[in-house]
Length: 183
Image (cartoon, rainbow, N blue to C red; front, side):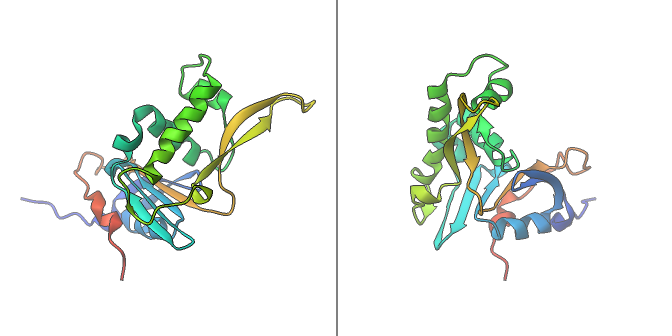
C-alpha cells in the first residue's frame, strides 16, 4: 500500500536572511519566489531575481566545488553579519590558519555561479549577493580583518533540506517543485 504525501506539509530547514527556521514546503516555495537570492541546496540550484535580472544556476557544485560551496553557505546563513577570516579558520579549517588569499579565492569561486552554466539574464557584479570588506578586530581600531557580508537591503532564502527531526527525512523529495512559479 502506497502512502500519499502532501509535499506542501513537509517541514524544511531554511534560512531567511541568515536566520534559521522550519518552513513547510509551501511556505519555502513562497519565500523563495519573493527573495532576491534563493538557494535550494539539495537540488544544487541557485536563483536570483533582482532589479529585472532573473536567472538560475542548476549546477552550483560544478561551478564552484565543495570548499567554495560551504564558504558561500556560511556567508548566506550568517544572519547578515560579516563572515571573517577568523570565522573561516574556525568553521572551515579546523581552527588552523586560513590564508587571506584563499579566503578571497573561495569567494571568487562561489561567484562563478553568476558567470558559468547559468540560465537567464547575467547578473552584474554590483548585484552579487555579498561583498568584501575589512572589519575592525580590536578596540583601538588599528587592526582589521578581511570579511564578506551579504548586501544590506536585499533578502536571501536558503533551503537546506528536510527537517532532520521529520519522519519525511529519508523520502525522495521533488525539489524541482520549488522552481515552479505559482499562479
